[in-house]
Length: 251
Length: 251
DNA sequence: TGCGCGCATTGATCTGAGTCAAACGGGGCG
DNA sequence: CGCCCCGTTTGACTCAGATCAATGCGCGCA
Image (cartoon, rainbow over all chains, first blue to last red):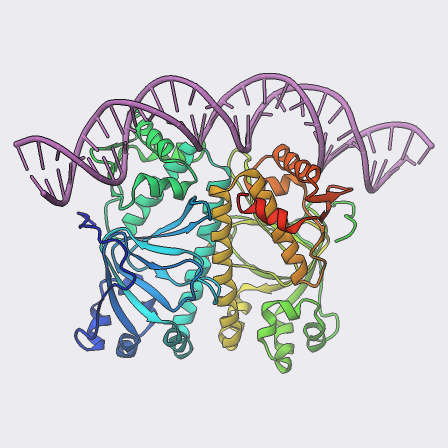
């Protein structure tokens, strides 16, 4: 999440580590366990969980899931950041969301992956083969319940974002984006003031339904008003939360 | 779905029918069963299902679920159409979706309803008390699996809509809307050419992130080009599907 | 049959955000 | 060390869709 290495562009198949240590330890020691769906599985059954998974490592820029393809794998993010996106025929792009530690990738209709996924930073993923994942769901009702809760949350989050895209001004969108980022950072034990943005202005624009230029202008406007500050484009400090909140609500 | 009665404005508590016929028949004969999550429950267990539900009837305009409230009830639509929406502090509105026969209402975070729900036509709902619904989920793993599949679909549908809101032009949005409506109508055994739109232009505008005027203008433009036709605003005929498809894809 | 009320349409004008274009600047590489 | 590349910023201008403002019209009702 700090520096962004070379940028080997999207080898379809990524470096994979198998069977390092035997199962129990791997899942038991997983840095993402506390915040991922796996915490629905008891300590003493972690080895079975581990047997169903493979750890995958990706470099920034690598696309590991393609819109429209058959969903062979599901993932949990162990570390790093990922973006989900959709492309239109003419090249327009919509970024659907940004994911991090603990987030699950795998919802959608059973026949086609709903959107592509790309690593923003170095990423470590926990990969489930689809069939095995289904077996896990059948074996562990708690896991299924957990997943339903997560999907249900995601539905609500999606509705929130639709509202943003359908009805908010550029300033409101950017303010909400920054506040949401701060909250996410805080949830993972980070600062709620100093943000590291793993994505480019272009990613933000495609996420907020704006252009790069507009995003850039709003950022500078917010800086000039003293609501935020930054030295580099990717590390922003929120100087005035209440002010941002007011803007995000149409103030 | 044909004519729109008086419009008794939102009595908070709607007419409720209880225990008409005993359980088995009610759910066994339900017109929505084939297309709702209830088809995950076996014939011989329908009486238990029926015992957990209450049938509710609503008139157009009645709001039966409020954004932000605690989610006491979950619903299945037996007949009629419903819109989900969110309001901003200053009155701006986003319509999140339109639902019909068989659709489930109840996803979202466990603490707060994500968006309000209003009847567009006369509506008949099957209402589950939240606690009882949870028990049902625990009792019938198939039901839970079904619900997860539905939630997962909804996530994908939401992502599609975000793309529309973030990146499509007004013409593209309206064309996609009409095609999606046609598909939905077809799925329920209706025509895929002649559409009855249970919502107003204002609802459509808030759904597509546009204004009433723009929606109206696009409709007339599509009509002038011979792609659609209509005598009244609410019953549209799709004259040229391929043409609409082309527009919806940025042609 | 005629009236009134909401929704819908249409037109004229405005504007927030997009487009086009240029310059800046930081990080990696030769 | 300095150059190059790519992401970012900034500025000038444009435009799709919003806003403001009538007018139209179908439907329920008296």
